[in-house]
Amino acid sequence: MNGAQALMKTLADAGITVCFSNPGTSEMHFVAALDSEPRMRAVLTLFEGVATGAADGYARMTGKPAATLLHLGCGLGNGLANLHNARKGKVPVVNIIGDHATYHVPLDAQLQSDIETVARNVSPGFVRTSQRTAELCHDAVEAITAARGLPGQVATLILPADVSWGEGGTPCPPAPAPTPQAVDSATLQAIAEAIRSDGKCALLLGGQALQEPALLAAARIAARCGVKLFCEVFPTRLPRGAGLPTIERIAYLAELASVQLTGFDHLILVDAKAPVSFFAYPGKRSELVPAGCRVHTLATPAQDAVASLELLASALHATQTQPVLQAPQRPTRPRGRLSAAKVCKAVAAIMPERAIIIDEAITSGLLLGLMTQGAPRHDLLTLTGGAIGQGLPNAVGAAIACPDRPVIALIGDGSAMYTLQALWTLAREQLNVTTIIFNNASYSVLNVELDRVGAGRAGPKARAQLDLHGPVLDFVQLAQGMGVSACRAATASDFCQALDKALTQPGPHLIEAVVPQSLSASKRRLLPWMLRALPSLPPSVAMALKRKIAP
Image (cartoon, rainbow, N blue to C red):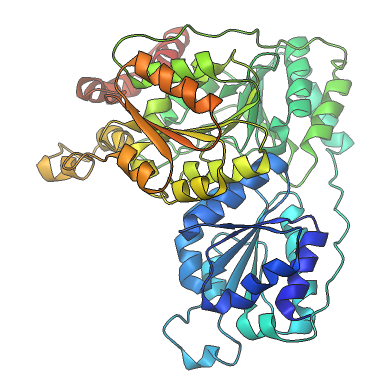
């Protein structure tokens, strides 16, 4: 075997059987080796950000990594944003990057770059350049082991061309999976005592703590002890819907998150970090935990969050407590002129069982959680790292991971243009993905932020940077040009009809929802004043206002 053939067998033996690729000349021996391994599925993407985002979506739904194949440092650069999202979501990815032959590197050819330095931004825990064919598969096993551990991570393996084509490659067997530890007894007892105290307690769940067994254990604790359940603002994967516990997401806007956390004496982290503001704002605190609230850690990202929650439930005598579960509840189908809220309502009314919802709707999805909380059971994937352009690639990966489940991707118009090439891969692979594009012809969230940061009165040039008119994007033609069936809806009835059709016919479909901005200009002008007033309002009034703004 050459190096590439041995690497291919090593990957497949470790259960890595999907590779999302955007190859170049340096990767041709790896590409040729794909046909030597029948277990490996190769999925071509037209942009590296699609490959990396698809690997992220695949791993979120399977719990195991896929491989990427990127071309040199420039290809890695094109894929960085979605690798950043995977890193923030603690998602396992084996990130393979082709490089020049080792003897060619000192010549500083046109595409030569320092790949390791670039990669460490998204792979702080594992970056390695394999130097010899004989060592390649050992390096690969270590990359796979790093990616699969807790917390999951992006492990980057750099593959020089001569290491790939060199003879003498030897496949290596996979390493045994590491066994993470649960919470220690001293920490467990201290947290149990905090919950038993007179103080008001909340659990903040993230990552592995949002798996269904962990959610049920947390819900039993909440039902027995009166603990409040929160989850991270952008969960990696959240099972939700009828028959599952409800959990309140921390709000994106820092002012609203502060309202949610006010009054708690103890905040207990389970595979989550203490909440901080998404950005810094003049005159506002970045740390959102209220003064006087003590922060505890039940399970770090490196520990077994499910076992830790189950141990805590046992310590609190909650293992037999009946958790509060969401009752089935669907809204009626909307009518009249289409709006973002009506799109969310229609999705909740029509979505089938076991759907996978990709939420990159930004401001257009403000009501999605409220509308779908009693819908049939589904999984929600969100924008973990805040780098837009994740949604469509995530849909590719999720659909390949779960071909028997419908995928519904709700995407803002600005976000869609970052990785629109994903539509071509959806068509090529004939994936059952329904893409809904909210076309409000605006970077609406940035209009909100422009008012919040106190940048002063915006003039016409400033406003033009946040406006997508002139020309308005035509997503129907864009989708059809890449082989995806597409239609446009401007009324609720047309949208419902299109969604019915998309969910009952195989293959990819796109619905362009022509909607006004969720927050009108007058609401955007009022919002900063409302947010500044929150700390001076009675807690009950502030919470009611929070639920009105972001339910």
